Length: 124
Figure 1: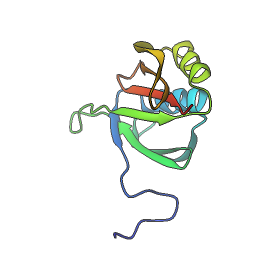
Figure 2: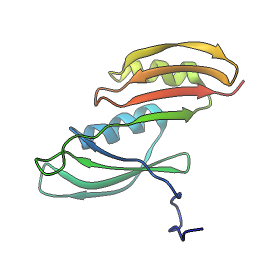
Figure 3: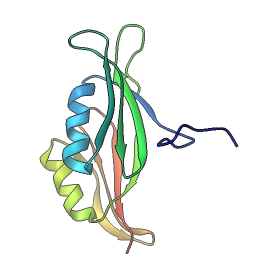
């Protein structure tokens, strides 16, 4: 098994976004994300940033001509899918799938304003 720095997991998503700073704010408000690191390329552009959501790190940066936008799809377990889903919509996300009860829990999908999809799920 590979050596992994403390506080990180073996596999981490790395997103290249248009609006990395706003993405941090969205993740904090909706999922309670904690900002671990933010390195700026200049006064406006995020060169590298990291957030932690429940022990999982997501890395990301602002898109540039050299590094075009690359988005992701996430499956995330939360304490209350209904509350989190509503919070995401209040923060500008749009419905991908309605909240429903599935064999694996209560789940629904939203797309954030950056183009990432989040399947928000609570085990039942």
